Amino acid sequence: LRVPVVDCGRLWRTGCASSGARSERAGSSVMARVAATFLLLALCLGPGVAEDPRNFSDATLPGFHFVAYPFDWMNDPNGPVYDPVHSMYHLFYQYKTPREWGHAASRDLVNWVQLPVALSCEESYDANGDFSGSATVLDDEDKTILLSVSTPESAFFFAVPTNRSDPYLKDWSYAASEPFYTSPVMARDPTELWRGPEGQWQLAFGTENGTALLQSQPGSPSPLDPGNVWESPSMIQDNTLLPGNTTDERFWECPDVFSLPAPPKDAGASVDDVWVSKFSKIGPDGDWYYLGQYLPSDSKFIPSSNFPRGVYDQNPNFYASKSFFDTKQSRRVLWGWLKMNDWPSDDVVYNNSVPAEWQNAQSLPRVLSLVPSSTDSSGDGESSMQLTSYPIPELEALRGTELLQDMDIVLRTDGLAHLLDVTGRMLDIEADVVASAPGVQCGFQVLRSQDGETFVEALTTPATRAGQASSLRILVDASIVETFQDSGLTSRTQFLTTGAGNGVAVVSRPPAPSGLARSSASTSQSHHCSFTGVRIWPMSPFNFDTSLVS
Image (cartoon, rainbow, N blue to C red):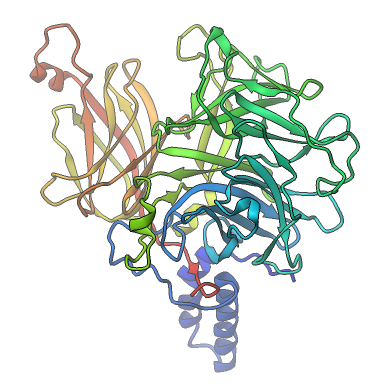
């Protein structure tokens, strides 16, 4: 079964209205158009038509960030993958306690069909939980999708679709009665598989010593071959051997090793691809990455001193991220867990007498890219490129009619916010800003209460020079605010913890106080932010079909 791809966001906003607008035409023609519209809407909705369970009586419930249904605990994104057979994206994630693998599917990474739980601790070896892992599309006749999963006991196992012809891949089966590998040391979070130089099946996984390699014997025909012998001969990246003779001797969770195309016209790039080694510092302490090269012959990642080490997001509660290569769009897409809640108490949250509530969300899907950079953060000019993460363009289908278009304003850094004649709890904001002096920060207050006491303040990073220009994009979703500066060179996720406001204001913040004696009055008079081209759109919740679990 192959279902045509439909621009569902555009259809929801224009389909029925367009049919109605043509009512002066012949009745049969109108009825044909209406029938066609509803047929396409059915394709958008997926397997059935069910009332969206998100009635948004909870003002903090996000509308266009993915939140699992039925509402319950959710954490790490697992195994995001594009299925080329059915033109469908799949997202798995850590769900409930003990951990299961929740599952949802989408044709556009925007609108979602909630599917039944994919893995639910049914074998003896995963009875205590199905921890994080990945998905691989094998290059065989059936394009088999293989889930690689870890357990609390450091065992790894495979799962496969029960019915490959089902476009939603609702049912999954354990590939074997035993794990294919059990680590002698604490280990978890296997990546997708790839072929090594001698035909081995290889993957990476997380340990307290860094990112480790796991591989089969050379020439194995399939990772599912029961005759495979799996071993972990070496580390892909040792956390005791980092650039500058530094160490980071904490457990590296949720590793990710992949390549990105070097930016065009980058004179400093001597290779076509640059490799990324990402890890999540247990704590959590955020998602970190190195840029460098991967040596297939040695199965080693070599970080480069010329490229900066960085974080995907300035908020350490953007955590346990997972990327996948989107073969449909030829891009690398990133998901991250937005840890908004404390770890649950099993006997309180999950007993039958207490209804489960939504807890945590997945980030917006982001495209990872490399762009040229003339200098690094130290100013020595060595770094030739930087990594960016920026929302996928498909999300713009959820925009409504602009609330504000091309507004310009200059605002002094006197601590006063300039309230805009715009309200909304789901918004997309774009602006270009110029900071008048080093240290100045420019931005917006969103989700602002009427008394101005509660809000989320989304700002640029402190300017490093006078007249520094930056671009801002701020996506506001009820209680989640994702801010992207300079097309994703810097990103920051924030959460609204109290209040339920919907106001928007422009703000300009002075440099942080220094040792020099200087009055705040003179500072506010001399420093300012210039905002140009401010545009604000309302955002609609995505279409959420829960008919298969309702």
